[in-house]
Image (cartoon, rainbow, N blue to C red; front, side, top):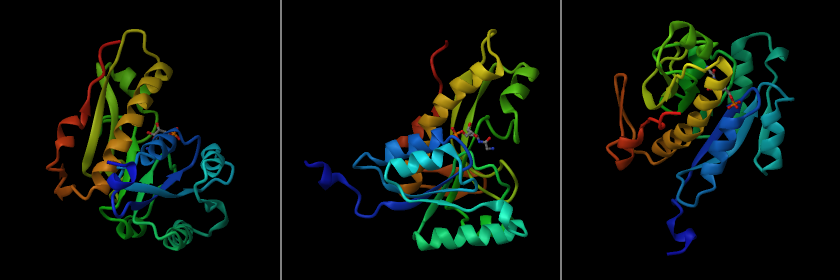
Length: 224
Ligand code: GAR
C-alpha cells in the first residue's frame, strides 16, 4: 500500500504555541510528517517575535505568527488577537509547548477539549515553575512529564499521557531536565496522535482512549 493511501482523510489542523526554543515543537512537527499521523501542524504561534522556535518553524516551511503580548492593554485583548490568528488559519486544536503565558478562562473556554499542554513533572505533583529543582529538593525517586488537557486552573486538567523518569544520586536539575525533556519528546506526539485520531473520551479527570495506544501512556525508561 502506498504512503498516500494510509494518510488520514482529514488531518486535524493544529497550532503549536511557543515562547522559546521549541524542542517539543520540533518533536510534534517530526511526528506530523509521518503519513499516517492524524494531525498536521498548520501554524506555529509565539508571543515572542524572537523566539528561536519561530525561526526554526519558518525554516521548516510552516506558517508562523507572532502576537506580542506586551503591546496589548490586557490579557484578554492579547488572547483575542491570538484567537483571530487561529481562526484565520482554521485551527482545530492547540498544543502549548513551552508557552509561558497564563491563559484566561475565556480563551481556555474557546478551546475546551481541544487544547493540550506539556508540563515537566508528573502532575498533579509540581505544578508551576522550577519543577526539577523542587523534585530534587523533595528527594523523590521518580520524576517525569505529563501531557494534559488545559483547564482554567494552571497545570491541571485531565491527563492524557505521562512518562516516568528515575532520579539518580548524581542528578542535578540540569541532568534531570535533559532526561525528562527526552521523554517529553516521546509522549507529546503520542498524545497528539490520540487526540487527532478522535479516540479520546474525557470523563471527569480521566481520559479514556479505548485504543491499543492505551498501554503506552506510561513510559518508564530503563535505569540509567
Ligand atoms: C518544556 O520542558 C516544557 O515542558 C516546559 O517548558 C519547556 C519548553 O521547552 N513547559 C512548562 O514548564 C509549562 N508549564 P521547549 O521550548 O524546548 O519545548
